[in-house]
Image 1 (tube, rainbow, N blue to C red):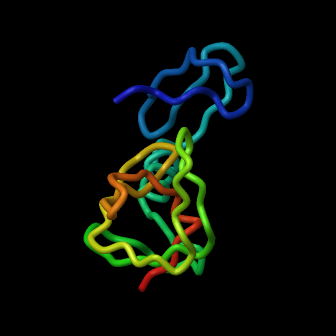
Image 2 (cartoon, one colour; image 1 turned 180 degrees about the vertical axis):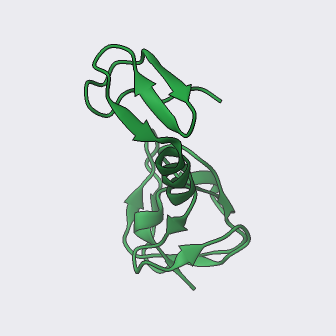
Length: 111
């Protein structure tokens, strides 16, 4: 496990000390449990209505999306079956008639 950067001075010279992380540069201390809960919160992917998405869910596009580097447009109302959740900038991988796409969850709603 890598130690996170200091939330106060943003330097990465930190170390664990008991149940806290300590910044060697500014002396700031913060609990390790808070860092673990932030990672868990990032793992939840929600659609445009706030419903939690899971692998295998079916979703519907809520607006027309232009495909980057192509003249293809994914139309609003298109239903996508069996999504796969991934980490990173685009949370959802899916396969449709036009190929495989990476989509952001904010443009989807659970079907």
